Length: 332
Image (cartoon, rainbow, N blue to C red):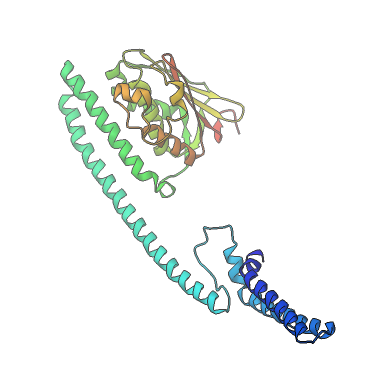
């Protein structure tokens, strides 16, 4: 209603000025009977009132649509019977169709790009595996250096793969019950070569109770792999220990991964989850792309797991993941 009145304010103003002019004009002509002049003025008021009511009835849908706060509505219903409302509806329908066509094209291009990226990453894994097999029986310093570079390539390929898949996360995840202790043992074995290369020993602090959490195994494996990878890289030549702890709390299961490496400067902690942010450590060690922890944060949000980061410069860095949905051997 406010928008309607504002759009017709000039009409009301002009009509008022016209009424005053007619009143003054007839007054100076000698028609000074107030009853007649008031009658003429009221006829004008009633006429403009009827016109405004008529326009309100015709364009009520148009004004309500213009005042909607929900900007996500794609389809526009019939806006009214006036020429203006019908013209806006026709124009909006054309724009909506154009928007839908562009959106479908963008989705098609994105799917093709994701498909190509996935195929390319899998193709690159084959030569890397072959190189691993070729040097597996050689322990000289040169081959150790080659293994480190191969691991960096594999880690980079994983980042590219999961970064491309993230935009289609809703179509590429499946929640299942995961035995957490067994799952972590599998990840430790998967990263065995990494631990050996960087001379890091993982210490496990697992409870006796068998704990199962609900999550997507593939995405969770990538997240924990990224955290372990960072922990190992930034602990090399400073510490030989990595603590992995599983703890049952009152309302959740806590998975804690703690390294005793270089730590993260306090000014960088609040930004490490931002895309492409490398921080002080990334510039010093040239190991960071700035995407790993960003993907970790995004995936944890989509899986609805809470993640916390604590760090002391030169002392340690701790990642804590909280699983609110779980099953234990003592829970029925």
